[in-house]
Image (cartoon, rainbow, N blue to C red; front, side, top):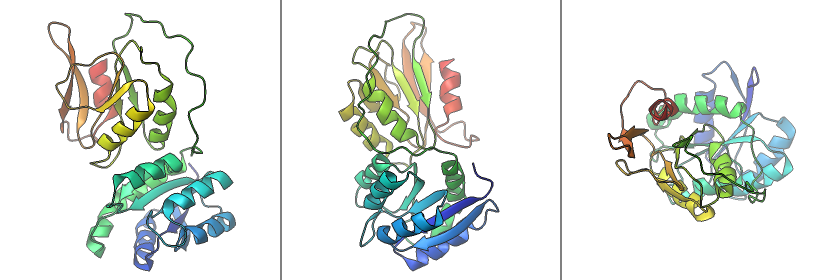
Length: 269
């Protein structure tokens, strides 16, 4: 992560641009170097200012957020954090992540100052994390799948924890695994409430494995991928008969994130 993170703010609302600048300026490690009102202006300012991170709305005139992200990633990959209401459809957010955005912050639907400022701490932390992420250019998963996976009793489950940029990496990894994958896979990622189920469905469409949002209480099966739902810890439990099932809970409540990768990994171990 750079010592001082140079950030470009992109939003069609002058009010939102001002407030996001104020929020990010709370951190001594962030310098907002510019603000653009649409994707077209953002392309020009990115070339001129060379920011480390860009915060970007999705719904804008001229060139919208997704169009900007796609074009910018082709020109020069930059870490982009989407900051948007995107209330029309979660599909917009997933399209932005597919295009190359590394993270997403849900903007309050009511843009009164007190509501918008509620996301300040979260936004600062995500911008800091994005500065250390390596953005990926959107592309089809064309790399060869493993030529052979040998079933073994040495392991019961694969557990994966991902952070900023992780949804892109999963879309590169999971579709390469064959339908005969010999153990279940459990995954913790960080998305706002309401997006993990949609993300799981999209990943399922691209994969030979069955990908689902964990419901809690289901028996884990080989060849299935269980994604922790936003806002709840995913853990694994083994019964006296040896059957392993998923468990969802808001506890522990003292973790920095929910779901927590620590909770999943400890239960797996």
